[in-house]
Image (cartoon, protein in one colour):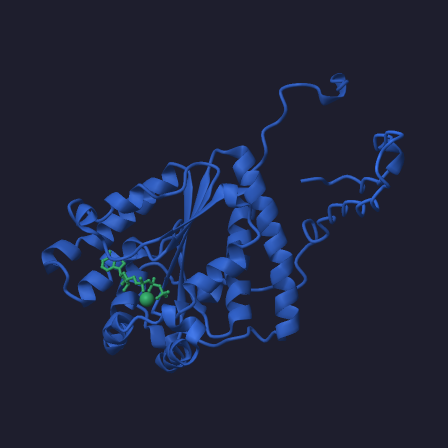
Length: 314
Ligand code: ATP
Ligand code: MG
């Protein structure tokens, strides 16, 4: 990314037109200069505390104690401005993570249907360089995947060093959905939380930071969002009648999620329960957690093993 002064457009540098050339068409407008990244090094404008959304490790929780709609006392216009500032920072940090290529970041999103996993991913990671960021959506496992242990397909999709990996649903389906719907015997799924903790610990010690977000909505809000998918023809493709079966199990999902969160929220792989009904605040919180984490990781591009001043480009 160009960080120096804007390059001036110099028409004199164009090849001269031959004498018999057809009448010249008007010159194309000068290329737009790269916009300076004015937000990148500015400190955040507001002091946003994300700790209260983090699930304490090992402490039993109830999802009903966590807000689904919040604004942190901020005005929308202020929150959105801060979000844009932080997102610029995220883009710059991802570039350094890629340049360093020694560590990775795994971001997990879980939610009830219509909780906003897709739109959060789009809003937060949209401007991040797609060459260093990979999104993986986990659907119900196919027969090949079911023929292996539940982490087989997950491990194959964790980000490699230098990358940010985003999981839209994840191995947590195997501890939550599978338990709620009794898709395998209890003596199999009951061990999964323990396997997940070992797996995430392995990732951490091998250089992959893990952070997990539950996009928390109320049952009423889900109704509105699902109804919107029915009301708008352009959203019909998003409606899945099977979502209504999951909706009927709302209470069981909330209970099981709460159990799993308190057992798997660790210092190095925390869960955040994000109030997701105000989308601007949801995006702001998620981005803030990611920027804080990446700033702590402090990825650095490798130092040049040559003296740039000694090199002359002819
Ligand atoms: P949208 O929000 O757009 O509906 P989605 O993530 O719900 O996206 P779908 O294709 O509608 O995508 O649903 C995926 C389904 O796959 C979910 O019902 C989820 O519970 C299920 N699923 C994912 N992983 C597993 C798993 N390991 N075991 C059982 N079911 C799973
Ligand atoms: Mg769905």
